[in-house]
Length: 140
Image (cartoon, rainbow, N blue to C red; front, side):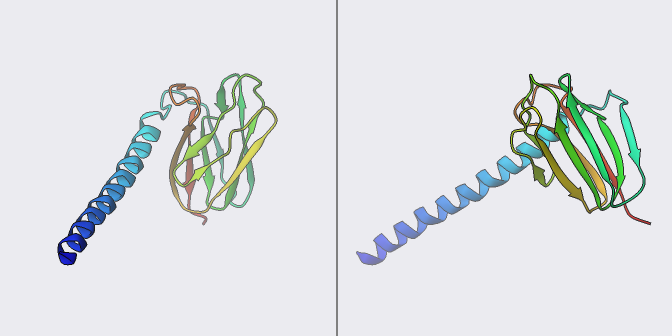
């Protein structure tokens, strides 16, 4: 009798573990798909900063990021500053997430790896003007 109870508990535990793993991967894929689908590719507001290790600022004002697309070298510290009194964004992207940024607050992240990092406002995911891209090139 104890063997059957032990087996039943083990099977239930296994299903719970599989369910948790499945839910984790489902949420991970969903968040990556959401970030990619929310990218604002139609806005050509682009800034390039080719000197690695510098500080670069993205301003949040008038309900939008400025610049929308930013090209930097690896090691650059990007700071988002909210200068908008009507929007309180939470910036999220591949590997980073800010707290909610009320007016006057900022969030910084150092991009050490080359790649393209789409980001968006998690508090307003349907607002297409609150999306952007950080394009990071290797240091030479």
